[in-house]
Amino acid sequence: MLSYWLFFFVISFFAILSKRRVPLTLDGRYNSSLSILWWIVILFLAFFIGLRHEVGGDWTNYIRHLQRLDPNNMLGALNVFADPGYDILNYASLGLGWGIYGVNIFCGFIFSLGLAFFCRHLPRPFLALAVAFPYMVIVVAMGYSRQGVALGIAMIGLVHLSREQRLRFIFFILLAATIHKAAFLLMPIAALATTKNRKVVFFSFAVIIAYVYFVFLSDAYEQLIFNYIEAQYRSQGAFIRLTMNAIPSVIFLIWNHRFNLPDSDRLLWKIFAYISLLLMLMLFLTDASTALDRIGLYMIPIQLVVFAYLPEAFGGRGSINQWIVLVIIGYYFSVMFVWLNFSSHAALWLPYKNILFNAI
Picture 1 (cartoon, rainbow, N blue to C red):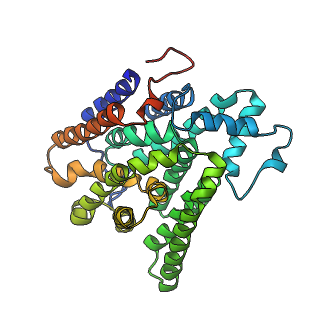
Picture 2: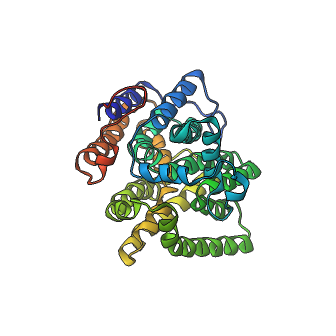
Picture 3: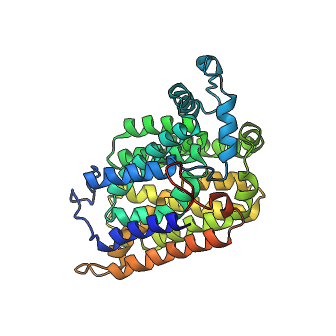
């Protein structure tokens, strides 16, 4: 448990010391290039995630998946209707003789790169990273590798969408969907945020409805393919995790005029917020908590966006607003403390073990 807290406190220390960045453009866009410090962060995160040993809710199932693959029949075994991207990472690790640790290193690096790239495009990158750590890093990236790497790739796509580089966005979302199909949800959401064409809007709504229906029906299929512990875990914790998206969503929908965002980004995150609240509503109206939780996973970036902008949205323009940073860090400290100490499934992540050193 100490390893988790040490990582969180180091990130929080940088978040407290860091001041708000100056936008690169007049409409509020930030430079997302990665400095040497951020490459160090990426490498540390990648090894922290990738070299873990017997940590995470689906550890044994990912090992079984790797063992079922035939290294001599890669092309014949790939299933384009499943998750071929994740299988390719498995085959690459098998070819190198790295086993499950190679798969996790690949996934950890891709996820960490995407997370860092996304954080760097926000006004307070280290605060966004501190927000991401308790759930997105520990639970998702270290527990459910496919979802983690797909989310990392999707976040790269969202940065390109913010820059109005739509073809790059489409490429990265399609790439993410080869790892985990649910990432495709971001495609029609982006279409809604970037066009006023009624036909495109109608088509996007139709795709979202069809997608949600598919995800609901695919629950049983997903269980057969990966035999998730996730079903029970998600059912019990879906309310908390969807609430974590709903809180910043409410803040943004009420006070979005305070956020210094380009108009296109403002509309995108409004859509994220509305979907996050709709998922909360559906949780009370249906029994499909697993499917709702899976969709909610791709709404997590709204937490990073809202809380990275919050200090300047509600603080004084001429002050450094670090008291708001402390409040946000305190909130996520509480989230992490409660999950590590009281979650019925936290034992699957404890103690943290790494193949390079003993359990901490």
